[in-house]
Image (cartoon, rainbow, N blue to C red; front, side):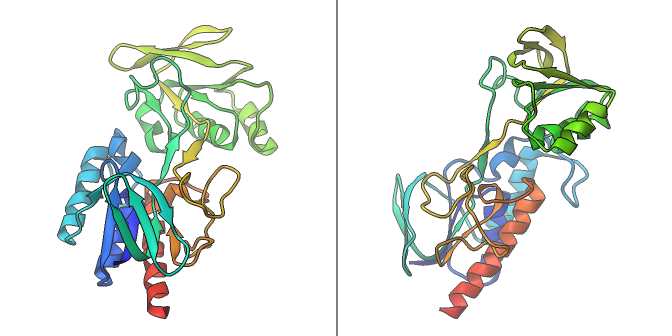
Length: 295
């Protein structure tokens, strides 16, 4: 029986574990793949306080070193089901079963993908899922954004301020995002709208150099930013969620079930960034500690 089990060792889960260890609690950190989550496969990070530029793999390695310093080694297991009702929480993995008084869910989210040829091949080499993370690497170059919601509109606007030209490609004639955002996009001279169109292939040699767009043929670009949404890794948790599957929390990261907390991209957060995920993790740790003290 542990005080707290944290599921997921991305920035949110890892920082939560570090804070809980500092509080002197008996914890278990469970991870199905590798420490760092999506940050580990980001080519470079340049918007995290204290690191002007750092490679994603190095950043994640530093997280591992910090966990080791706190005498916390993640258990590698794939959690398949949970029982969260009551005072004792049961976490069921493919390898083992785990029990705790409180649970922190930090399973993150996976980017919704286009599913076209070249997308996987050029990930990190011109294919990105975050303009604010990677946009500066393509300053003064021609790029494309795929999507029609608020995220795609915001990313196109952000990129228009640093890139020579931005193609905004959406499969419908009308955007799904806010009207005021779409109007701002239409006002930008260096944003070209390719509506009722889809990217059907991404091409290049070592890096992205072209995209194939339905009805438009091949277009030269240096990068493709895919902004068609994310899928939270929340399927196994029977908790209150948004229509998109994000676990609903209050500002203390508390979920609809007592003793259960969620942090990072798996919850209904307004911004999915490394720094906000880490902050969530710190808050979740504080809330879990207080929950245990009050029992």
